[in-house]
Image (cartoon, rainbow, N blue to C red; front, side, top):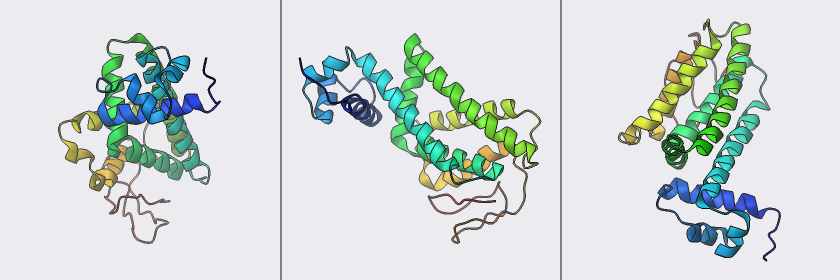
Length: 224
């Protein structure tokens, strides 16, 4: 029986995610995942008994990356609105603009319609994302930076709007083009009740006149 190095399960999950995101679930088999991972199919089967298990593992890879990215965005920031904006901006960039992540999550939503395990996995992650945003919105509201009266309702609407953009991009890819990143961010911020005011940005290349205006460039600016 082959002995796997401790890091191999995560390598398998990453390889599975990459292939699923590139080609969709139906077009990927275990041989391809093993080849991408640099191991034999037997080694892969030593840890995963089915393609579905690899899909769930790829989901965990996606979830883990979102959480790590979120923590990295929050770590250097203290201003509540800046923290909210940074996390939302990162989500727009990685979950909406990035086509691979968009394809993967669309596949998950489709599979969740008929698979209880996938649905439960996504629901658990979605709940954690929702609670992260609710906490950020409540902090910004307490600081007087948001005008929403119901943070949880605002977050639910914002997340639904984001998912709607991703679904629409399946047949209208231009709505999720890199050039639309800042417009999407501004519109999502407006659903959360961001007050209109002039904000100066850390990057000298851009100035945001209000949270509802469009900023040029593919990388976002940190504003206060």
